[in-house]
Image (cartoon, rainbow, N blue to C red; front, side, top):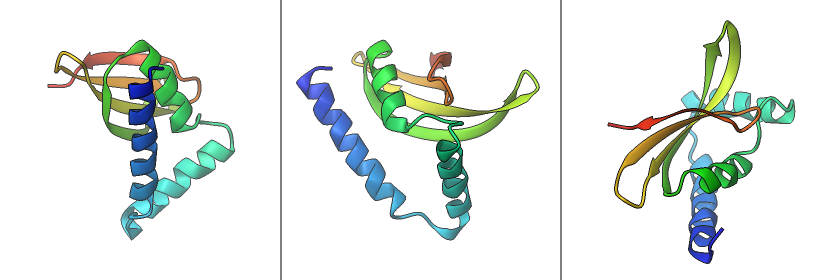
Length: 109
């Protein structure tokens, strides 16, 4: 990781921690479910996922969502990460939250 990307990463982590302080009552249950999933080992920490993805998909992270989906008949946690590439394209990267593997990578139109 270059010094510039390390700085961006640190800023993003700081912003994400501030965002979590502004959770309203409607989303509090979602955050609690995600926290419990992390404690049970069902998902990896977002910092670890971002580090891994940053090595594979260059660019600036502009959005992150954690979703519960059904794939191949079983429930899975998916991190949906939106990235702005150095050439100005927006990508949507779907990552298996349990193992950090990219499931899908597509242009985000």
